[in-house]
Length: 180
Image 1 (cartoon, rainbow, N blue to C red):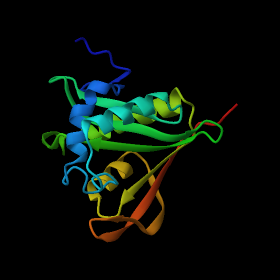
Image 2 (cartoon, one colour):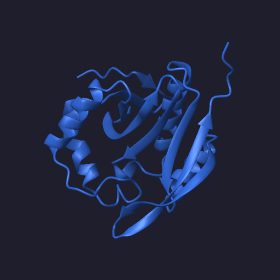
Image 3 (cartoon, rainbow, N blue to C red):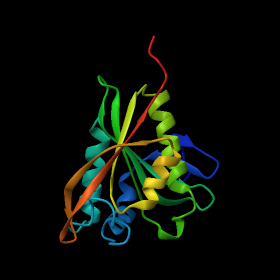
């Protein structure tokens, strides 16, 4: 199958998530290491539940989820999303899961986020992008700072996972282009 990418960089292609991607996604979401610092891995996922999720987000105008494809291998290595898109206030939340652990630490997360941020600001004309990270997720905090996000606040004990409460650090990136 020839891949058609909606967004592309030197190493990555982003395309809409397809039902066939459910097989890989549910494995990632059932992996404790992959989901250590996100809200997944609290309930078992199945390929069927992931297919239903994919069908739902494809119909939801407030959510855009892209499969992250490593171009050289054509491997689906993760997903990146804009969620809770508010076209009136021109804001959204951003998230990522890189499921293929051999791809961690190679800059793919930063690259995928960069593509999505450029799309959000240029094509969707968003003004603000938010992200909430678990306090212990140092790698993602470094990515956010590298991409120009700034810490905006903390939600203490905001998520209960693995038998304890975790603080969420809120980051924001503002599109400095002026309207009009």
